[in-house]
Amino acid sequence: MARYTGVFTLAVDVENLKLILTDILSYCGFEVVYIRGNYLMASEVHSQVIFSQLVTIEINIAIATNSEKIRINIVARNEEIPLKSDNHCRQKFDLLSKSI
Image (tube, rainbow, N blue to C red; front, side):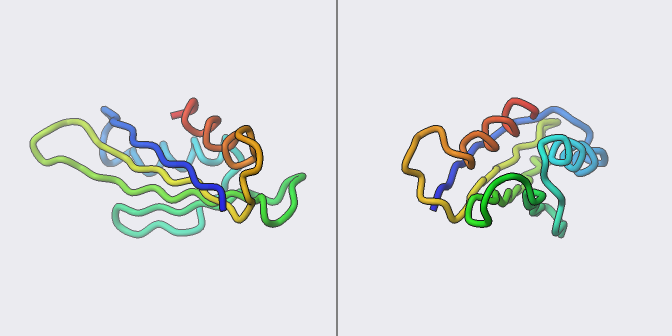
């Protein structure tokens, strides 16, 4: 199972954060499947890859009360065994990271 994680600190308005993340995910080829509180899950829209290579994104949002910054934890994973360092899951994670 391929799995990549990243932590990002953002300085955006809390009310617009989920809309911004939804737009970024859509741009990267993902569809939001579940939103609840500070948790968001997205799945890759069926593309030219086999089912085991489809990537799932999980985002946890941590909002600090004394700061204007928001920290998000991102996990990208799929069922593919990562035999190469530049696999499909890594490519999608890198695209999402650059977009954020």
